[in-house]
Image 1 (spheres, rainbow, N blue to C red):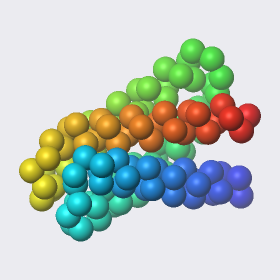
Image 2: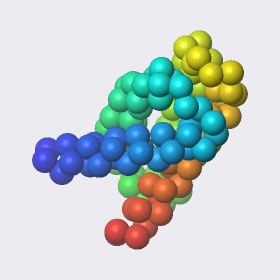
Image 3: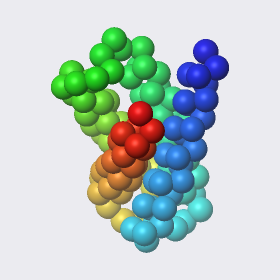
Length: 115
């Protein structure tokens, strides 16, 4: 249980940091949009991490496939909510794809480097 909670905290913290940096690089700097990003990640990240850790496959093609499906669902969820709620006129779908894609890649590199 402790390891799961530590994993959730680390994953959420790194996701917030990376995705906020991506938003800033994309020119999304309004406080409301950055707060929206934080709330969306608070909703999607723990659910995604929990589903991934509850499934029985953690190595190989099936594991990778599950991760990709989960990430696509996160991008669709966050992108649609960004479309409805974002103040900036930047492309919310591109923002969701870029932020989650870069965050996923950083997480994959971290997992490879530490395991």
